[in-house]
Amino acid sequence: MPDCKLDAHGIHSGGQMNQNTKPVVTVLTAPGEQEPPGMDALRARAEVRFAWDEATLNNTLPGTNVMMVTDFRTEALAAAWPSADRLEWIHATSAGVDALMFPALIDGDVTVTNARGIFDRTIAEYVLCTILMFAKDFPGSMRLQARHEWKHRDTERAEGQQVLIVGAGSIGGQIARLCKAVGLKPHGIARKPRQDDDFVAVHGNDDLTEQLGLADYVVIAAPLTPQTEGLFNAKAFKSMRNSARLINIGRGPVVKTDDLIDALKSGEIAGAALDVFEEEPLPADHPLWDMENVIMTAHMSGDFIGWKRALTDQFLDNLDRWQKGQERFNLVDKKLGYASK
Figure (cartoon, rainbow, N blue to C red):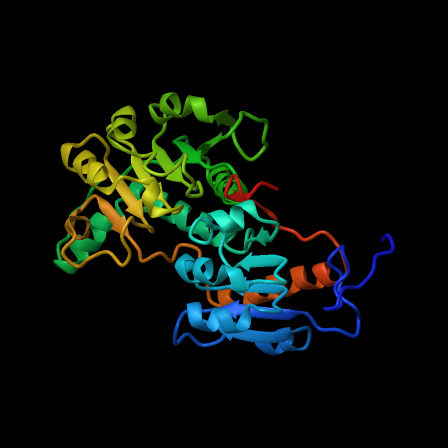
């Protein structure tokens, strides 16, 4: 590491802390939320402050070097942003960072990392589960069970079905691996075509419409960006097979909900499994609740027992790297809105 001087806060120009100086870390949580597990381990490495709204951020941000964000209330952070006089790095405890971004952060020098990798496997398990539930008609069986009705039916084979994964990144790749393991044929959509052993093929964004017409299952694993917001609209659903099912584990606003409901009612597509929605929580009187060709969960596809501690441990690993002047992992391209490597 090249020689560099310490500033008044014990930070090298390369980001490495003086060994005798603890960095200041502000943890942004939701009001009333318990502190994340693992904070004792963080306190051993840093001076820890907590904030939950604009007022507390204005008190804690001066002198803060690093933020760990568990609550993505961008209006509070954006409003308090002028108080961030020493901030170098924000870590988001989620894979998606769309709710965190605002112009001053995007255009400034503060780096952003995310929780890429923590939820990949469990989200992939969720996707595979929903595919098999559709193929074996488990929703129908559960309705029959609730009515104490014995009714034999034939169901579909999953093997050989084509799965289109829109968003061929870290999560998409894990989905593809599990799909391949059971004989499904995963194709991906990414910014550009590429060779990837996890997929049968990865196609570019320009091939989306064509690929939608070939898929038996369409999985949304893309981040929310200006390019993906509303991507699945009436035109997209018309491009899909009548027998196809949509699975959304990405972000709710990627799908135009009203257009999806129309497509499900008209038979343009056969079903949907939804873990994320344009409006959360979903209102109790929303029509999606009562549609028999819809499987719904409450934004939980990646959450596993112990996930909160896993997020803290991941942040601590990256904090150690930062304090040693090493390259951090999961650096987000703020213009693109996701970690690209």
